[in-house]
Length: 524
Image (cartoon, rainbow, N blue to C red):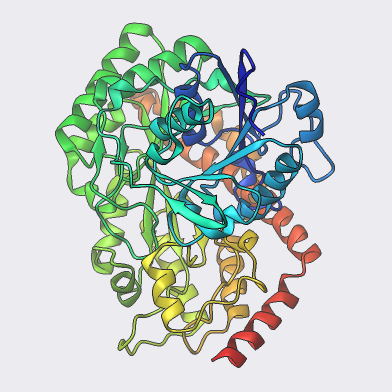
């Protein structure tokens, strides 16, 4: 157990590896999760504590790798023995790996801590019986510092807000901690604490929380804002220390605080002019922000080149079931506005969303496919991501489907399949689970194809044609670059989907699905 007599203590925070190659694997090797870095940065300010972050999905800089593809923790523990190991449970699909590692460290007498969205719901008991000593509920920067102080004997463990642990076989859950509102008191995220990772796309944030209350989403609560100055400082610090050029603003909805967002964009524009460095940013934003040309113009001038938009579905009944405040008849024209402003538009869709009780709506899988393909074509979406609905722990969607007795048992369809690529509940008639799975592969497979490899070559040979745009070279470059970018991404997407399909064939999900459907039917 934790040795308080040591002069210095070592905390290792682990971001568990994905269970298998999937559509997120490519980008995961080039970025990291922001939350663990924020927590590590808070601990790094404490006396007598050293801290590191191990992202198992990004070990490209001499990372020790084991046979499973994750980090070699036997090697790590021998090299730098950790006193406490923290685990990032932000992605439900990584939870089996998280528990496996927790048991490994616990068997070595190491104290284990876990936090993240997976534990925001009903899975605290599961964690405490799976090798986790303490579960952090909610944001971790303040909680982890108090918890470590308590483990050092400087604070009573019962006075640490926002944690759960076992005592005498009984779960003790301390009072909730208030969400952080003063972000300036926190240190800037220190990415130098991540060992072995090569990061090209740096995550940054200004806003936590989202007030849209989508049924399927785990992010809830009133938005809380850091200052534009803090976000600019995060970006400038990374440029100056890491020569970072590419950033992803992880805020759920960029532009929620309109005036301050525009002010940030203007500040970032001026910063780039003064430094002579052009930056590239991607943000997540609501589709209806297309109605705000002043905001879009400020975003473009700031170097925001790509927008990820949760379009979810072009089907009216599905949007209503999700609590999405969008109208299908407006979606095409709004998406095209982003396109005209020069943004690369990444559209995110959810296929086959289940209807609520009392809604009499049925649509065959082939008809849903037609709707989505038609919308993608008309809206001129540059890249797409089509996932199945995921009944994540703690969401209203999961509670509803459990009430309807439609969720497949966890013992059959385990947490590792909770990444949006697998059917996890009995779908609406007339669809079957097998049809849902085949449908997203159909849509993605038609969008990302091998033929785009040849089009990349055609783009390269067509580059000299820019001479015909000498009267407006900027416009000509944008048109050429968009085509080249999209063809490159679509060919890369084909490689990714091919790899995912290969891994899927090795997996036994089809057998698990049959068992899950049988157990669900018998239990009903």
